[in-house]
Length: 112
Length: 112
View (cartoon, chains in turn orange, green):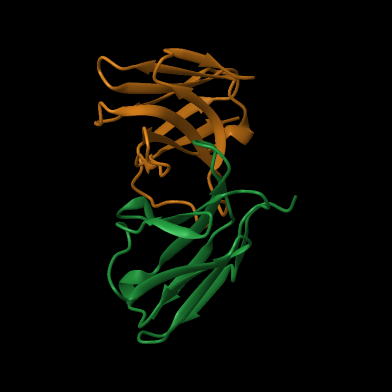
């Protein structure tokens, strides 16, 4: 598919386990962060977002944690399912600029 | 809504030829983005528009690349002349507000 290349860091988990995907960012002025999921042959799909005035936000099976002190973002997926297998990107945005800066991505492989 | 529509889905051309990629954003979205995705460089922003006006084209690689948005429902990305190093997947995305950008399925371009 059109996804990404073969040299991404890969996280392999068993179905039903929890997954944690990490992302480091460098711009201390970034004030908005998003996680995207990209399945093979598809465009990135929005998962969850968080603003810099928060340190945690929860979705249906996902939680995003933000640590501004060390410029670190993580995505936690509870009870990982085979359908969660994809490449996950974090993206950041700086106030006043609409465009996002994407990280390099992590490939999540869910073993049945 | 059909989402962001891109055409063609696949394009194979020879070096030196002109390539035109097309995008129809989601109706009502004021922002349109063009991204390029490669194994080596990941997902890169090329240019984005607000209300049909180019706002930031600092990601456009060189003068061979040009983008237009003649109206709110259509944008093109043109490469002339194309080179093998332009081979990539090109995504178009649109958004209403900061953050959640909706991506199209992408165009896989191969320049021989």
